[in-house]
Length: 438
Image 1 (cartoon, one colour):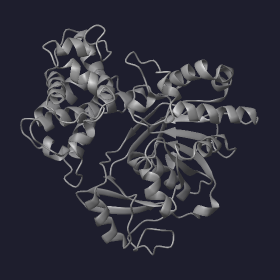
Image 2 (cartoon, rainbow, N blue to C red; image 1 turned 180 degrees about the horizontal axis):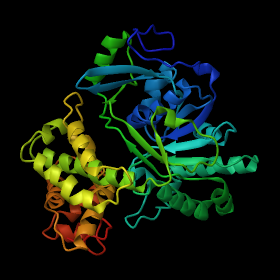
Image 3 (cartoon, one colour; image 1 turned 90 degrees about the vertical axis):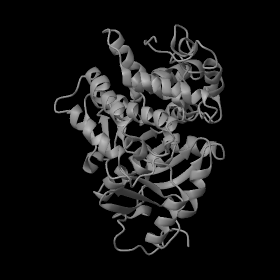
Image 4 (cartoon, rainbow, N blue to C red; image 1 turned 90 degrees about the horizontal axis):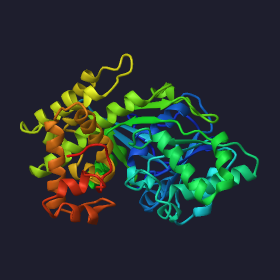
């Protein structure tokens, strides 16, 4: 039996405390993968449980139809399994009201963005979804493609302007340094090229707050779905598995109404940068190092890699001695305690977080995860042995013959084929733009 609104749930399963069909949709989310369903959608579900109204989510897949095929027959319902040492907590999420596949229903996506009830367009499209060139500028040719976020957002904003409606909050929830400012700059580049008459309206009507998102969400496996089916008594094709920990820090800069996400523990702040930088350089930086070093030593999962006595000291040094000194912490932000918590989270044996999943799209991730830290220390004449080991492990991974899931895969393989690999990757005019020089 497939999960549906009529499925009788066991008493232990938390469920929405609101009438889903009495709630309008107020958010369009681009990139409705597992992370969004385990993070922002849960915060929104909590806000509606606390009494907020009309914040249902229209979830858009810009590329593959998989999520729509999972959630569509379930009326948008799915479960989140939060796993930890104390066991698993299973919860039904009702915030997602309608999944759409942009390639199949492009006008429906534009109409949703243009709808009067919509106030927020949020995004988890991964680093590569922003279609940046190596120098950080927008790849204008790619940005008019069928799966481009810019194409849909611009068309929706143009329709809002024509209808006399106000602007929107564009809320990036991806792991980019200064993600709000990056989104605004790239959106402006797109508008200047393809919608010049919309640029000034966008500047005056729309905001792009910075955010920091943190929750480990491994890819769901068939074994995960089977475990949920046993606990639920129904098959949930959209099930997601995650850890108990969750954090969301948001710059308090909204163009209009928003859910009271703070009721669910989100932090609304004036400056996200210290939290974002700590997450990128400690958590994400350590994760990528674990992935490439761990894969090189034959490990499959994060908890196996961090348990390796030859790897754990490298990761600890990366976080405490290399990344932490580069961060201007906010008042009350304890980076040492954060590193302690990360090590515990990495070691969680209840989460089978595959290193290969983290290893994807390395060219898009390592500039903000590793290279900014390396550049900071290089300016001070300091060597970073852990990050050097991580870079070497990435190069070895690219040379290994294993599949490389990266938008620059062919160019990366060509760059590392010769003895001057480091210069071709990171040197002046190299494939990966940064201020660090090997």
